[in-house]
Length: 332
Ligand code: AMP
Ligand code: TRP
Image (cartoon, rainbow, N blue to C red; front, side, top):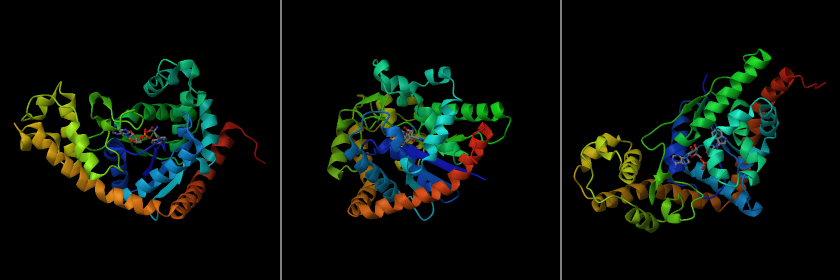
């Protein structure tokens, strides 16, 4: 049986990269699988957060997931800190993972930057908590953007090491699901950097809460090169900004990059950008509207997260108990 788990950090507005790389796929997977979707507030505090802003962002991200089409009657939607078992299993994994494995993680290197010694210890062991999120439910498939691939490899390594250390077949080997034509959406101003919540300039990303006007402006001002659109995907090599915009178009229209190139072969970017903006607005406006409606009643969101957490605990608790017993914790 397949069980899906994925997570998103409540550290600011969701953007088009989160949507195309992850959330849109989460919505689609609900039709065929049992799914758990988690707002990972424990992960968020690996970097400094304002407490009031963190609570608001948790509700906003939850509202975006519901607005995008995640149905809480069908999938389990909750915030991580309500299920204590995540932190408990993460502790066990802190003692399974080797320092050398963590030293290879590129996300830590990027986020810690030059100030490694002043990064939190939590930021360093972040991938162990992510492994716990997934394995606490024995999830088999994890839909994410490309940037999370390395963390999922570490999750497999932890699962394998736990199983062989204790001579058990407890944890499954999880598979990443990296789906669609835009698994790594890039910064609109610099096609070599990924689109990110934390970039200082808002013109680098399209937020799920942006107005149609803002979307038009941001796409108009997006960096491109002076050449027209190529006839085939091959013509996008060494053109990161062009490749990004065409990839976004392909993902939004559920088409391939190849076919978008054929359709716009030889066109100027100004004309292509107008159509891209319309497509982005048509996709995002209904989500933004629904999000606003949901946020007008935070009690509904809070209740949904509380009920989701209860359902999550019902799956997680027996798996945590089993793990603790295997490790040798006495629970009379
Ligand atoms: P985060 O915002 O880092 O919590 O990421 C939540 C989900 O969105 C993860 O599955 C990421 O892989 C995905 N994601 C984040 N940024 C991007 C991006 N620029 N392109 C594609 N997917 C992304
Ligand atoms: N690390 C992921 C990110 O930044 C978020 C995350 C936390 C996650 N736990 C997870 C994703 C478990 C998938 C599964 O995008």
